[in-house]
Length: 548
Ligand code: F6P
Image (cartoon, rainbow, N blue to C red):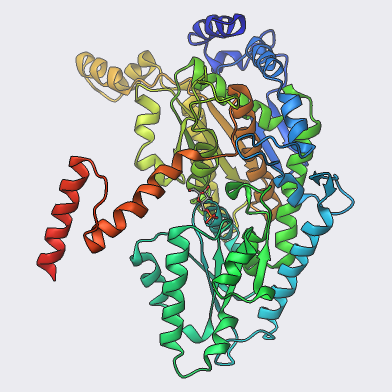
C-alpha cells in the first residue's frame, strides 16, 4: 500500500472513535479553519465533520501527490485535459466576461466569442418579450418548451426551478427530456401551438430522445397550425448545439441556431446557450448574475490556498470518506423547496463524470470513485429516509443547504424550516445518548425495563459527516456560485483518483443496443439478444398484440 494510503487508513481507524462534537471544543486538534465564506453570499461549514488538523494535513498531501494544482492549472490553461477525446474543458471560460480572466482554446482567446453568443441570447430574449418575434398565427409566444436530455436538460431545468421567484419575462418554461411519449404529450396537452416555441437543445444533435421528441413536437405544431403558412412554422423552433450543421439539416434556420463548442462538456454546459431557458425565464440580468456567481467561485477555486479552498475541501473530504470510511453514497439535502431538482442535477454532474474504473492513463483505478448521489428537499426527506441516515448501518456523507430568508412571503413559516435544518444538523452531529434517553423515558413514567428497551432503540450514534451550506437568499448569483463549487468538487475528486471526469463512455453501450433492438421490436428484424432479453421482448410483444 502506498505510504499516504496507509497513513490515511491508520488515521481513519483513530478518527472513527473520535467525536466531532468533542473536537468542536478542542482547539489543540483544530487550529485550521473549517468554515469559509464566499463574498458574503455563501457560507460553507465543515465543522460538523469528524476531522482534525491531521486529517486536513493528510488530505492536502493527497492533493499534492495527485498534482491537483497542476491539473487545475492545466484546465485553466485550456490544455486538452479530456484525454480520451483530446479536448479542453473550458466551462469556466463561459462565465468569465471580457476583461476578467482570459481563457484560450487552441491558443485563441474565447471571451469575445462567448460574449457574442450571450448577446445573441439577449437579442432573442428581447425579440420574444417585445413581441417582435411572433408565432405563425401572429401571436406573442407565451410558452417555451426545452427539448433536451442529460446536460441539455438537467442544468437549465434545475436552475429555472430554483429561480422561479426571479421570473421576469412572462414566458413560461417547460422541459421535456424523456423519450417516453407521456412526458411530451402531457406537456403539450396544456399548451396552445399558436403561442408555443420549442428549443431543441443537444450538443451533438444526434441524441435519439431529443430528435424523436423534436420531430413529434413538429408534427404537433403542423397539426395544430394546419391553416397557417407552413413556412411560418419555422418561427416556432430554435436550436442550441455544438453541431450547427445537423440543426440546419433538421430544418432550423441558421439565425435561430445558438452555438456552443466542443470544449464545453454537456453536463457543464448550463452556462452556455444551453442556459437559454434560464435567460428566457429570469431575463438577461438574472442570467449574467448567475454567471457572475459562478465566476466568483472559479476565482476562489483558482486562487485560494488549498486548505482554505471550499471545493478542494468538498472534493478531498468526499474522496476520504469514499475510500477510507466506505461511504458509498452522498445525500444532498436542500432545505429549500426551490432546490428540489438539485440532487438529480448533481447525479449527472458527479456520477457521469466520476463513475469510472480506469485512470486518465487507461489503467485500472486504485481508488473507489464516484459515490452514489441522491437526496431530496427537507423537511419532506425527514419523513421518508432520514431514519436511515440517523440509525442506519452505512456511513452516508451529506450536504445540507438553507437560505436565511425565504423567497416566499411568509418569513415566519420559514423559521420553522430553518429550525428543522439546524436541528437535523445538530442531531447528525450529536446523536442521542442511550443513558440520557433512558432518564427521559423513566421521567415519563416508564418502568426500568421499558425505559431500557426504548433507550436502546432510540439511541442515535451521531458523528455523521455533514457539510452545512447557508446563504442570505437563493439568488441567481448564489445559484451560480453553488453549482460552480459542485463542479469543482467533482474535478477535485477526479484529480485525487486520477481519472478523466470529462468523458462518459459507459453510457454509449446502452444507446447502441437500443438502436439494434428497436427494429427487432417494431419490425421483427433479427437482433443479437441474450435469452433473458429475448424472452422479455416476446412477452411484451404478446401483450402488445393482445391490445391490438
Ligand atoms: O447521457 C449521455 C449524454 O451524452 C450526456 O453526457 C449528455 O449530457 C446527454 O447525453 C445529451 O447529449 P446531447 O446534448 O448531445 O443531446
